[in-house]
Image (tube, rainbow, N blue to C red; front, side, top):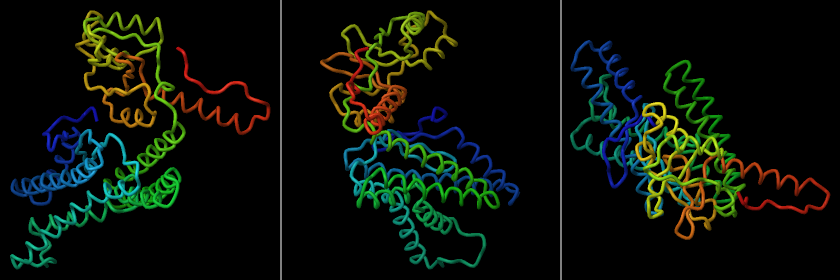
Length: 374
């Protein structure tokens, strides 16, 4: 999402446009000119794409505003060539809530399609015209019907797949429900990919999104299940050196070499967290600004924080929404450490090894997995 830029903020939610969206507009313009040979045809085709993606924004806002009713914030909505993506800070924990959030998007398209159908009837326009060149509003009606139907395919992590996962979770284990939904989603992705090879390349792109999205979501759910019940303290890196905004990048580089960690919390003179300097930002800053540049010039100010005493599940949700990819852990009013995807993965591996040993090693165990004193 680093190639996306802000368009507007609606209901407090940032709407972003991915740079690759321009390729879709360009391709649509080329196809329209090839077909019609007129500037009017190009403008009409590109204009329809614009209206269609406005509808997609409404679809994603349906998800976002429904999630808000359950106390779940939406990080942003990004428009991609294959559609829209609403990034929620976390998924609803209760299956019935996820069911409502998943259905809210297609419900927007159903309502729009019904309104357009009524407009057709009021204007005396046929819902199934005989002319191959469909009127604009008729095309928009069909597009909403197609969006609702396509999104309700049980291809997890699409809306229909989330509906399937939520329905299965209502009756049993959420992890098992996710496994089943992911397998169904990947099977449909394979089918979409095969159909796309012989008809529409965009279907192949969507199939890849579904395949890898299902795998990533399943891995995330399994990770949360493996770490459930552990405190944030177990996953954090305690040996991290807070930096000041006025420190140079040379200072951060030397600390990285000396202590082996690459991410740093940034605090002001009063000890308040004002940002974070990640290893990627440090390298980019050194390459573009030099070693004498200040931390304040390259640090990420959009950071998430976690309480050291809270369950790790809360930290995982915040970590997924963190633009910096790290969490600053606070306790007793000061920085206690950092959590990154790497520290989470390491804890999961040790937890898995510890559980394996408990199940399969016959000799008495004298040690257990405990927080590091590092």
